[in-house]
Image 1 (spheres, rainbow, N blue to C red):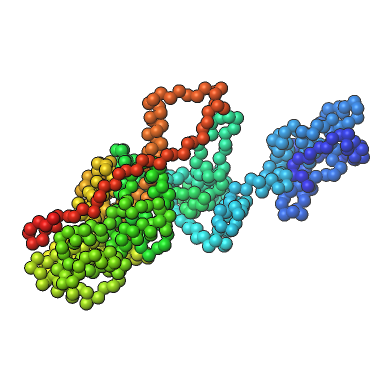
Image 2 (image 1 turned 45 degrees about the horizontal axis):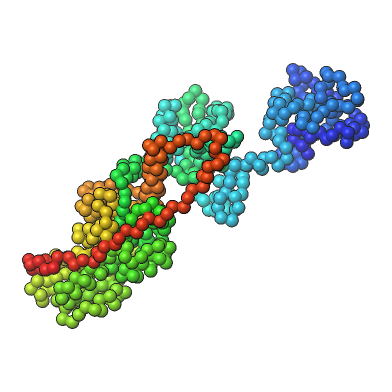
Length: 581
């Protein structure tokens, strides 16, 4: 069955059939009170109109038939199913059906055409991009099958100005625009206006060798919309907001502010970057990298930015940390790791100290070369849950038996994140011994100035051209700023919202994760390359030579390796007022 048009076969194939058709009565003119009501076919569930099988097929009743006796209708013309008029285009036919026969155009579509224009798509796993007629059907599908939860925010506003002000605040908070879906609809005692997300809908691609225009459309319908019921005489505005978007990301006003801060932070050249491992690349207790961090490291290498990984991890030796990172997909070598463990070992050997070890059992083999009989100092790191009163009492006895107690802690980590929980670090354990012995522990690791500057020297770049990326507001951000570097705090790892509101320490910017920062660096690099090409006066390609240009991007060459300097130097410790080196 056809809905609104009839594809006319060749006349020489159906001339006998046309001659056998009986003429049908003409419908009354449109200005007559009794409007012509064509027969209705509801067999397929749609309010569609049936086609008369005995329809007379001639172009116009007022025009004389051709001399050869045929009806003279070409294949490209469209026949009205309610009368005998023929139109050259489907647009004219649809206009005629709506104006003369009062049939809405949406009910006058060919079979199957509605499926082609469906724009509500489910992208969840197992649905194979299933399409739906409306966002309501898509929303119900997501709720029933995929256990989605959609919020509904209701509000009542008194005046139009209140509604405009409220709508503006909602748009600024979510960085989206609410646009009218259609004209106002009159209802009993009220007027209904519907707004949809400005990114909802299909984009139009340019053709004819024209440049493709940018579009914010996502190619399908978004589930978020705003329904406004305006009461009579403007007595009130009843608002229903469905704020959950589907199929695209929604950035907030805070994200815009972050972009400005990051762009300002990256104004100066960036030639090197120091990355904290735990909390930026991965989290303790989890066997997967933080989302986007693996690709981010590779993109940094492609940009030619030198990378070093600086850590306070006292559970793993540098070799073990490299194995951990490589198992997660990172391409890392041991010379790129800056860890406090080799520094402590070299220091103890040089000074001839005999340590009592309060460290994790996994790194104890690294201290086998050091004499541990009759200890005269204490080295404390991450105990990994092996905490007992016995080892603390032994450490207290070692420290109090020496006239110049030496307490060394591997990093100044107060706490860290493991399996989505915050646990105590080496600095918290060392604080108990510091209080009991009335002494101050030496820090080997972050935020020690010498430790961080050794990593900077390993890059061979001045601190002003190096970025520090970490999740610790004190050990990463404050320490890097004291060394003259720009410090960027990530919202992963042990980051807490209070860190962004610190009264003293102010990071240069705060980003979502390492991947977000690298995206900004890539955009900066593209802008610089574009400006460089413009400043050099690159000629525009003539129209006739476009086909000769090879626009395939060349693979980016790997940057030359940065010479790695030895960084496990011995720190000048002061024991009992005298400097020992």
